[in-house]
Length: 427
Image (cartoon, helix red, strand yellow):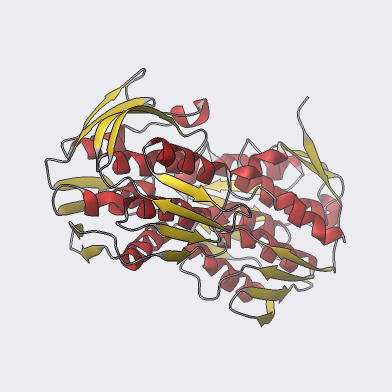
């Protein structure tokens, strides 16, 4: 019997919640710290399915990782020799951990098999494997050509140029950038196609700068100079801006006041832009500090037309916001979501129609035409084991009676205590 989470309607409330550390920053910081010359302490890390998988895999590769009892920090002493031996790594449901580890393994020596859940193993990775092979790294497919599991025979890089596509995932580029300083020579990265989710590459570049990498932007991509990470001993992980987005949206659509703790002022994360988007719709910033923000919603707000190519993780949340606007909305330039963990756009459209909403496909996005509140109907919204959909669809139940969502535990991928914080709405 599958589990469901039932949501009670609630408007005009006042509450306080806390968001976890950034998943994107935590996974990147773990790779950077493992490569660093000195031990590194990561403060305010996220402990979720993805980051736990990364910690387990890096530990298996000889890195010493100590987690504090209160989980407020992680201390990493990297395996400087990076003699990995013969190992099998399992990354579970984390495609990002898989991608980041492939480049990390290429910095050392060993015979490393990488496997994953059926969900991740069903995604094609030939494009990225072909890129890594350009560096002289031998990789073979263990079962099905073009898919996990793969076996990497790492003996150091022999070539200094790699072409990386940005068409389907920015994580390919981020993966190479994170580890390229420790390849055998300076690396010329040539990017092909427009980079989707570019804001995540920006996070990578900012963190690389913090750790002391020497990277130059070129006409065709990036030049990464062979160097060592030796400038960081302690690194603070920001609060996760995508996690904040659900509560910012909750405040807007219910005309409520919410204080969000662990909200970083002037965050380096692209999803920080969500605050500006909602401010343009009428969300009021009541007060803010370096580590918190208090916002208040409005009685009504207009629809919008937004290009979300740089911040695709915001699409599900904004789709739900659009349901309660006064006029139609368009979400544009996010065609890559049709291949991200399944077809996320189709999933959103399907579930909106299930509650009698109006959502239609655009060539590269969605158009949503809002209806009167009484027109929407309750029901069970399928989450497709997608954490972003689970958290976004929860917002529907604040406005529409008798809404429940399936498989609520899938949020553990990025925000394990999401529903604990969500319950604060009812206190």
